[in-house]
Image (cartoon, rainbow, N blue to C red; front, side):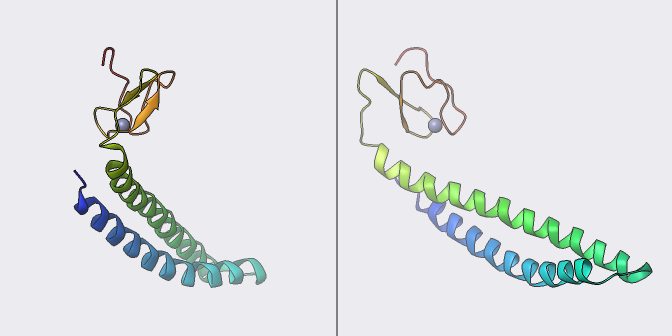
Length: 118
Ligand SMILES: [Zn+2]
């Protein structure tokens, strides 16, 4: 069964992350240029450093968010393509996410271990 909620959630998360990333880069890059190009002292320097740290965290958070969003979207598409496929003798199917793997792969991308007997 395709879980459309995953797809919608993944897209919403990605849009959110892109908006945050846009705002963050819009502040981070000019501050970074200022910080590198001009010699800042005292309060100005401290404000610039705090700004860079805060927006740096925001950039990192939005990238992590994007990763989660993409995982949800990929999950939706791999679910739809793999669910009807039966693994061959040299393959196994992940009981958690339904991905097909070769026998020499012990752990699925989703973290699930290969079952002992199919
Ligand atoms: Zn899996």
